[in-house]
Amino acid sequence: MMDKNVVLIGFMGSGKSLIACELGRRLNVEVISTDALIEARRGEKIHEIFKSQGEAFFRDLEAETIKEISQRRGIVIDCGGGVVLRKENLQHLKTNGIVFYLQATPEVIYERIKKEGHRPLLTVPDPLGFMKQLYQQRLPLYNQADFMIDANDASIEGPVAEILKRI
Ligand code: S3P
Image (cartoon, rainbow, N blue to C red; front, side, top):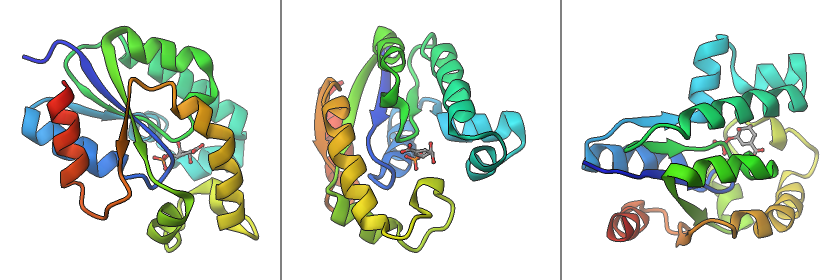
């Protein structure tokens, strides 16, 4: 039985959800996605919450959700890309968890997600430029994770093996 939580953070499109699912399957533990939990509880998609209530409102919901699920043990937590924006989120997540930052460059990420329409932060005139900017801003925050995992490769096998080795 896994005592700690495995927590995945990183930019949108870094593979958190796929890797979280695979870890859950291999470890035979529950996987909780903060975004999916917020959507299920509110009956609204993230982009709808952003549009109707604004980003600050979403960040409040996210912080509440993190605080609550950080108290659990032995689960995999797939975090939204912006969880690092509030310092207390990482503090809560680290209480019972080992935090892994899935690192991928803005270019790699952009190639992966450019065809998806559900990400509110990318509906801007120059999405790649915006992502590069966001990446620079967030890098020091993501670097507060316990471990950095290279997630630039299209296959999730490497990152999954690396995480399993460290827990
Ligand atoms: C966000 C990332 C999204 C989602 C929201 C905001 C961000 O999650 O929480 O659109 O600020 O980076 P994913 O990283 O799962 O796409």
